[in-house]
Length: 321
Image 1 (spheres, rainbow, N blue to C red):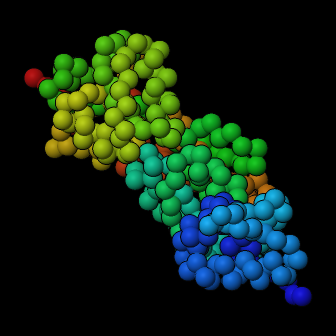
Image 2 (image 1 turned 90 degrees about the vertical axis):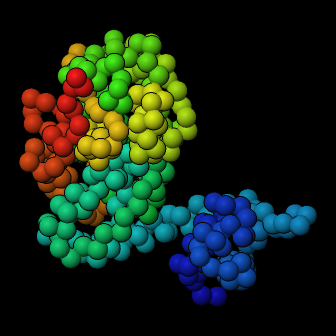
Image 3 (image 1 turned 90 degrees about the horizontal axis):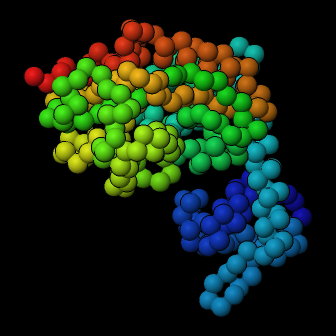
């Protein structure tokens, strides 16, 4: 009878995940007839009905769901075998799949990759941007090698190292009453309209917790990115809490917003580099995490600020007169 192919197992997992031939085929970048043919061949290999027709559509059978779970395990093991082959005791080579959360990717991912390529010049980075829940799920499933995300990392299958302490700054229009101050306090947020990212962003939860602790008015306008939120701030719709790592880009001179540090609290997030505990390259990833932490902590490297000030030098921080 022969053995199922890796491609057939990928099609099975996609069909189980999407529950629809068309969507599964699109996710696998193949035509519906191609995916259907491979699923039928897989059924003949295994002697089990994976799908059944209901009305005008098809559904995955209970046996199909059980097989898909086994297929996921096979694919994870296959990916780990490939990862083992790409790594050695001294270096990484070939494709390295790296993802970061959307509120870190535009500001830190390039510097993370620069560190990786300097240490492992044979690496070919494959980059992605995923919200925290998707990043953890994809990393755990061995579809990623490394992930840059905000703490906490609540998954026992993952190992992580904190690589950056990212203080929050208050971002506002230069005409705002607080722009005249060199620093602000949490009490200054009372009565302010604080703009939030849409649901699904871990940064939203962190900012929301701080706002509610001081009685600020939180407003979710459905901003999908920090760039969009900052455009809303520049339009005078409200203020927002901006990570220091994002400030050199989003609060650059001419952006229409200024930023101020908090003087009464240390409001910040921690960013961590994470990988699978079982990864054969885990020792190399630990070394990379230490190198990345040193790079991001370097005041002269572009993102981190001098120890006596959490405000990046390239941001517009001058008091309005």
